[in-house]
Length: 402
Picture (cartoon, rainbow, N blue to C red):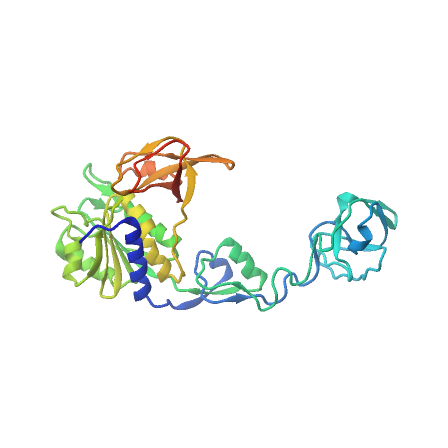
């Protein structure tokens, strides 16, 4: 089977998941547990926002025409604080002292900031001209009653939580989290709490994958480690196929004891690809087995994490109800030059440094695809494309925040 380019692999996953996955079930959850979930229904405003003409500053509500020639001296007829109704209606030559968030008096169309005023008893001198509409947000200016404020298919962020709370949604309709089975393979892999011999390793892949699944809105289910036998691997794969999605880690290379692909084919799996032109993560299996999407991810920790982020995450996103699954690439100048052989698209752990006006990305080459300590220091992945071999310091390189 021909190795796919990075973009071809992503397109294949997106198309196959989109065409085979029906809309997940909808459930209702409390507002305070909705963050990170995928919204399932339109959310509309329950009233105009703001529901009254709201002051955006501490100052004096005015009819703007009274404050075109300054200084302008107006009669002070009262005060309105946030949390109380306005009791006033302005006539020409009058003003009301007003606090941020308070409703403006009838006929007012602007607020002069308190910094530009001088008060003398019941008279106020205003020293800066004001345009109509300045510092006074009119009723319904932000959103009208019945207008959609959030659309289904979007992940609920902290800003979404603010909108939901504002329109009174104490319960939120969201799509059900897909259950994602995680199966690590290999005779050398032990539980995290075990004491490994020199030739053994702890099962970091299952736990890093579980967190990546949670971040995408899935519900991870870690299975026991599968030993490198056909019977044991098949037994546990069949358990994993009962979930909505199965992620396997390890056993997909060309080694004598790498049996995952053999078992999947024996179970009737339709494979869409088995190799992609990326590093880390070139051996990567994706297919459907008994109507369940399956990814066979490489066993090296960095390969496992990277291939999930750029490929398997698409499946979790779409199965969780998201309408899309983009990667958040951005161009950042390199802190130092970089070269690679332009055969594969490489994802390299990197760190952003500098200030917000002069951000640079510094690549940390680390010690290979098993160097989780180096990878943990990274806050982004730098992307070296397969069509370019060299970048100079200051050249823009695409990076993907982690």
